[in-house]
Image 1 (cartoon, rainbow, N blue to C red):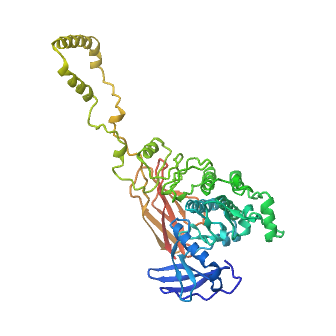
Image 2 (tube, one colour; image 1 turned 90 degrees about the vertical axis):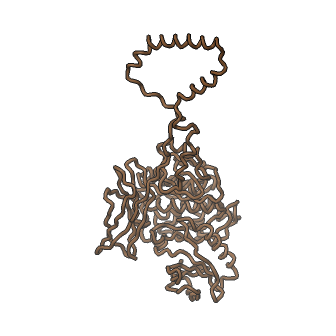
Image 3 (cartoon, rainbow, N blue to C red; image 1 turned 120 degrees about the vertical axis):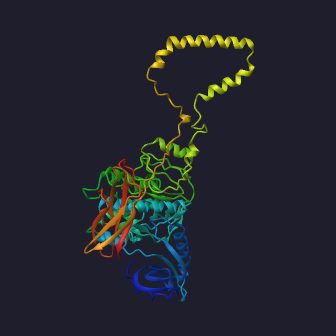
Length: 514
């Protein structure tokens, strides 16, 4: 937000005390308040008095939209909404203390690793909105905040609209808007949001909006003309791989049909770049409200399995897409694929294995089957059959003595155990997160310690400072402790338990200070 006009005075809201102004925009002011019960810092967006008639309905729609989606970890949480004593509508939101990403990229461009680590969760948030039938239509760095845990979070659904078909555009931020926004009949759809996702990642890397040209006029008319006609300029950075440039060019294609088919497909493409660069792969969190089972045409390398609420294991190499909870058959298929990795708690019932085990009891030996058959046939035999049986037994005895004796004296070979008599192993083994992660300030350093709840030989730990602005690559240690420099405000670390097999836990996060 900017300071183009004096802010309106903060409203009096029962149960909240105003602390400071955070920013002002064309329709609302945002203040930091302290909530009295429960005691916490919150951000409150208040509609301007002279905008209530024109935008109150839009403001209410924003509240409802964000409340519907804000359980997603990359969407700013809406806590409540109401009308102040002086009649101004307001939204109470999660307070994100970090500067928005526009402030950061203008100070210095993001590293490739940082930009990917932001782009993937924000794309997952947009995909979740699309599956709930909502277009964002204003994705840009200024609308991505940084949470207390250093995570990016999308906000400002003020011009959001239905995603169930092309929609007329009623508002836009020109530098990040797609060409179809500027037509005689402005239109937008899910692939318009994909364009804005690509433009946002490009901006973080370039330190400017995609079609802004240094030393030339960058007025709105100039930007629109370039967006409609000019090819996407290549990122003039030697550390940006060709694969990433190609992903951004596709996301920002002039024709929506040439773009990634969905925000999820765009996120997968960014994951592939991470894999190519040997970076830790950022998980994709998706809430599938529509229980949709279709797979995007964009090849995903097997990194995605969609459930009601899910988190993609970065190490997974071949996971099927399924919007339903995992069935016994799904679990069985996963057990056959050694590359499939399930990380973190999965709420698997301890008796799930009995679902996929064959009905034949493991204690019933194979020899019981022919004996039952013989017993069933015995009552039907007559006297002549008895003599025939005696003859057969005699011949069998001779055969055993002549041919079977050496085999009886030899070392017996192990029998092939029928598949139905083998008790299958549990196919899913979740790696537990580290426990008791905590930190202690010692001078200008913070010492973090943790415990391994289920230690195994070859265990190690991957850790990183939990910050969007920090170096995202994990460092490895075999000791359950790490010492980091104390930061201004909170110092947060993220720790992952990694098995010798390469499987990893969900990250645990702890913060000290603030």
